[in-house]
Length: 139
Image 1: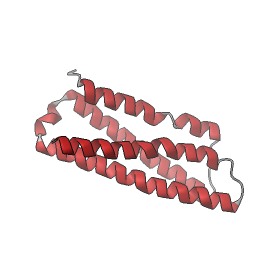
Image 2 (image 1 turned 30 degrees about the horizontal axis):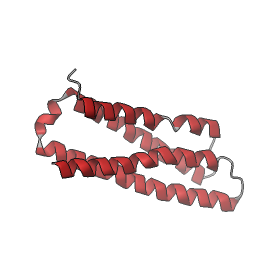
Image 3 (image 1 turned 90 degrees about the horizontal axis):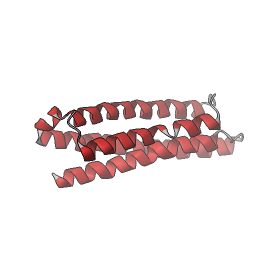
Image 4 (image 1 turned 135 degrees about the vertical axis):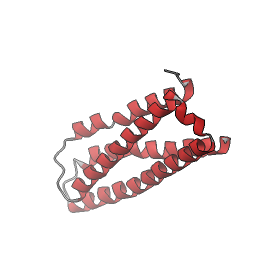
């Protein structure tokens, strides 16, 4: 079980690294006006998105495996809340993909300041999820 938890955490770190870095790339991408720079940022964003998606899928796979090995975990309120937050994080992940797609199609309408703000969203999720997993509150 500890191996499963270790890999769950490793892939969660991979996923969160992408969730933190992709909006930062968007900040810099806003300032690019030439086609070469546009292509370079789109390529970096696409590759990062693939890596972070692999991290997300593996995070869920190892998490599901942990739950499958001990189904009683689903009765724990902290885990149900963590799963709800994970679903919210998936929604954020998909939103980032939509933003990437807008950049790739020259349709971005957001400012660098906007991307600096949304860059903070995964930090809130991370704090809440780590506190739930470590403290395991019962209510």
